Amino acid sequence: MHSFRYSQGQLFCENVSLQALAQKHGTPLYVYSKDTITGHFTRLDEALGELDHLICYAVKANSNLAVLSTIAKLGGGFDIVSAGELYRVIKAGGDAGKCTFAGVGKTRAEIVYALEQGVYCINAESEAELSYINHVAGEIGKKAPVAVRVNPNVDAKTHAKITTGKSENKFGIDFDRIGEVYARIASEMPNLEIRGLQMHIGSQLTSVDPYVEAVKKISPLVMEMKAKHHIQFFSIGGGIGINYKQSLDSGDAAWWQENSEVHPLTIQNYAESVVPLLKPLGLRILCEPGRFMVGNAGVLLTQVLYEKRGGAKTFKIVDAGMNDLIRPTLYEGWHQIVPLKQPATKETEVVDVVGPICETGDYLAQNREIPIVKEGDYIAAMSAGAYGFTMASNYNTRPMPAEILVDGDQAHVVRERQTLDDVLKGEHVI
Ligand code: LLP
Image 1: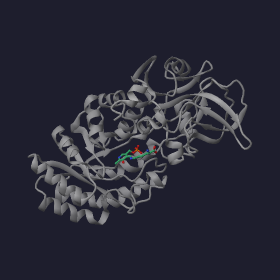
Image 2: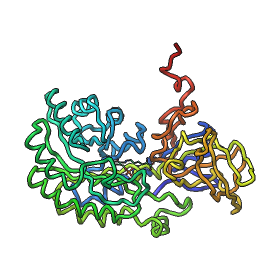
Image 3: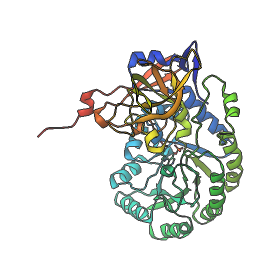
Image 4: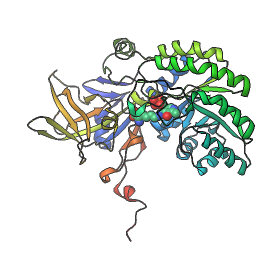
């Protein structure tokens, strides 16, 4: 589901023309649809309706304050991975008591901050970390609520760089050690309170099967930990994949059906498969979606600066680079490239859409058949709402793009474009 459509010859986000936004605010420009975010949250919330559940949005996917505030107002919690993300959540009006704190390398300062703010749970990823949290909590006179991330050794069948649930990945504690680790916490770590068990097997999962396999594998362990240590929750992590190939003219219903073959993981079949497995556990179920919530809710707008026809290829050189959207080069991420003005003909050409950065890996698309676009035209890289801006950098001393949140016919600047002085802030010559 998304709110990007061609209408009157132009691409719209909800009721706002993207071409008008690009002209007014300049490019590269990230634009998000509030309606799409709300729709995704509501749809997932309803799909999990039979369970006592909490959606903890994975802040790393898109951490703009306006996005976090939208989700907080819907009643969402947050999955955070740093003190910085917790700080953002609090600034956006989110509730620390609905936050789970993940990550393999939490520092003392982060543990202290999380405990002081009263996070719902710290999800630990190693025995060394558990001992350290116990130590820090004791020093500041707090009891730390903890869960352990279990590594179920299940193949999520996604890109190698975003697979996390295999034994060779750095995440979590091996499945068959969990019982022993929980017993150690109970007997040796008086400043910890065992609150739950967590898993996260990977990102951009396009089939429900790995979830089913992991939940089936972990469920007996969950029941055992419930009986022995009175855990309150089981978190099934995030990872719900999105469809990066979408229609821009058909309605939502048509889109889900149209793509059901290429993308068998829909929220309906996710819920139909996992809810019946989770319900008998009789626990609170947490879910940590990032990409599902915001991926298809955002686009990156960019302008074609030059065209270069080489011997082997035609390049469209645009003003957005890998520093603005690193997914294509880092994960072979595929983002649909569309012109903001609806093409008058069906004519296409095969091109590389490349950025201005001095690296061969600086591209948004390679060998891609796209409608004809000329110098000065604006195009959009679709489905860039997740892991787009949050992974952007100042490489090549390029200021970070502005971000816009569209709400109906209103477009709000929710982050201003950086100036060069912003980029240089804090640097000194000696
Ligand atoms: N929970 C945990 C513990 C995670 O590590 C992650 C993502 C999530 C939840 C949210 O996963 P999601 O629902 O968004 O798939 N930068 C990569 C994705 C990295 C995902 C990292 N962990 C990309 O652009 O594809």
